[in-house]
Length: 277
Image 1 (cartoon, one colour):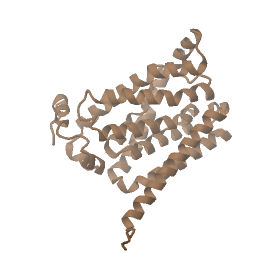
Image 2: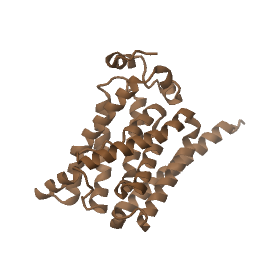
Image 3: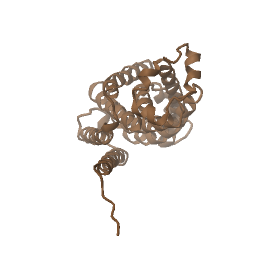
């Protein structure tokens, strides 16, 4: 007879997977609560009952995800997350005020995901929308789940080498935008009645005027705006990454383990005038 002993490393991996799974379940449950419950009062205040439930669900989910992935997050990642959150909020708020029919509120999320992996991107995205919803715009709070989609897909795009060449990044961004549009449409329709502010609300109104239902209108608007928005976002991020010194990028375990940039990254470096350091 032979028996397989469970090593401390195996136990740790199992615990981390459980934490990530629990965080994911809580985030999905929070999203379903918002879509099924349709708590319209959240548009007026993040401190309504629905708002507090959304905050609790997203924050707890983010914490569990972070706990499950913290062993893979170097100091550089932890230090970068607050900067990435600020970048998301500042650029997103500015674009919203101007009224452009895109969002540009996930540059920091994609940047962190490309350097540190999906879990780090998810944590960055969720905290962005929670902080944004509590400080400037309650509308941002329910869309934290969209940042989850962006963080996950950006991280896996990095693993597949989509940030190695500048023309692959917008393709990954457009695909991410399609998924984000489908996920965000029910929130736009059922929680906010299609009136989410910025230039996108006018597009929703135009589709409704053509005889489409509210959900169909928000979905069509998302399928127009989100792929374009994410393609631009991913392109901006790949240019930022190309401008960073290779030594800095290689400080991230995720980059080294999955050869995120590889030798082909030099093509982007030469195009941006920043050779490998």
